[in-house]
Image (cartoon, rainbow, N blue to C red; front, top):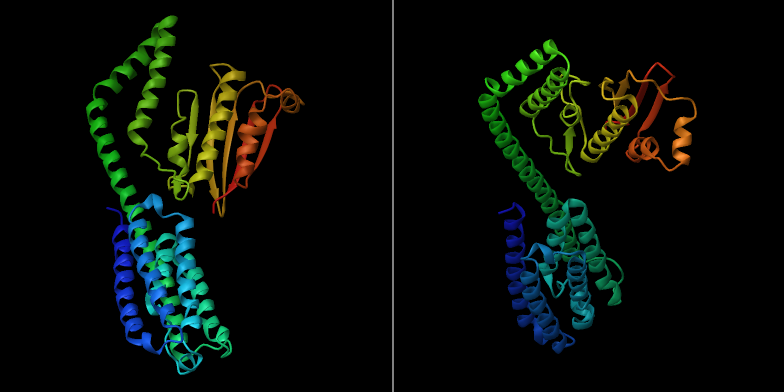
Amino acid sequence: MGFDVPLWRAVAVFRVVALVYAGALIVQNSGRYGHQAGGWAVLAVMVAWTGYAVYAYRVPARRTGWLLAADLAVAAACLLSTTWVETADRLARGTPTLPMAWVAGAVLAWAVSGGKRRGAVAASVIGVTGISVPGLAGLGFKPTPSTFNGIVLVFMAGVVVGHVAKLGIDAEARLAQAIETEAATRERERLARRIHDSVLQVLTLVQRRGGELGGEAAELGRLAGEQETALRALIRVPDQPAGAGGRADLRGLLQGYSSMTVTVSAPATAVRLPGRTAREIQAAVGAALDNVARHCGSGARAWVLVEEAGHTVTVSIRDDGPGIPPGRTAEAAADGRLGIAQSIRGRIRDVGGTVAITSAPGEGTEIEMSVPAG
């Protein structure tokens, strides 16, 4: 059960309790209204909407923007109906509005669904509506003490409940991530214990003997070495969640590219970036390494360096290939081959970064990508 489930239940209970209280006052004061039937009509609307809102908000899929907007609109309409039902004299003496605290149910729904900012927006709408009640009754747009106190309380409820809801949901997400990471770490440690003294040693032996024998055995040894490196990375690098709304350690995302021909160097501490930024850098580095394998041959080596300085993270990919002839990049883009233009430059540009490419025939190529760390 998610953290927000108890909050939605609390909002539902508040709606019912506030409805009972407002209904009792409407029944008690119905004989004093300027339009007695209007008071009963407003109470009927409140009862019907409370029942529907409690039903609708129970299912997350139904908590859409349309439902929230309709909820706020009904609350504001019931609040404005006070000017039609009540007499001006009673309003001037500070008589409370018809729905009383019932309108806060919509504000609480907005707060739970979107945090303190959304709660403050809904409270502001109810507050402006509350101020309009005496103005529309011809008493001037100046709230009575009871109306003013109600506006302040609704605003405080929207902000505080929204803030608490956001903190709780974030804490729940972090806890789930921590549990998932711990489970993955335990599984990785279990695998590491099982394969360290068997599979890795065999792969190391095949790599060494293949190099000694030469010929086809050397190629087999090279492949065994690559698999050993990949396997070591699998059991060494923790899973790196890179959700759109969270942050990810760029080191872990790039360590997966380590192999016999690719060396990845990164700081000893985590290099955390927004999830989308980290994923785009990972994809751009992958595209650059694909270009190395495609244009420089299977024996070419590449080095990936991750650096963090201040508010900037720089990732450079350098290879020992033949380099890029002058004008080749522009020619490839004109021919529709957009590996560098889109897969590298485009990705980094989309996350607010820059790309610099340095290359000369016979001297290899270096691609430097810099992105803001915020």
